[in-house]
Image (cartoon, rainbow, N blue to C red):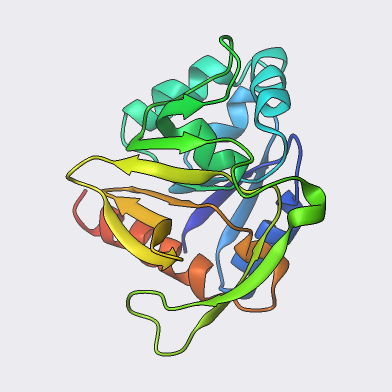
Length: 196
């Protein structure tokens, strides 16, 4: 059974946890450094990315999480979580955390304010039918490194990407009833476990 962590400091972490439970994973809500022990994968949920950075520091999780990612922990970042995983953050604050786990340049809130939130159907690599995606104050991916695979795009811009053991989405897959994006991440985690 995959042991999946969900960073539980802010955002819709409970919705992520429900998806993993529905898929048969053992779920850990991560609030303190000791919660990172023995995880197979971790989700960094949405929320406000600078607030998430501050909470990672105040909880004592920033450094242990950076070490876990550098040591090979599989991670899936959604919305603000994608911002935290990216190598370059445009329109961010100077003290904002970047784990530089996926070679991507992202722009915060590029799809607009809360009132500009929208939904759309995405064609996702390896899924046999569209995934209904919800974008809320979503970041845009403006540039990708050569090793990053685009799994889904919207208006010719990537919105779901993967590189090695890291996956990131501009949208909120946890806010729909569809578990297929979470299944893709668990498949990624399981493939990483198989080669250990």
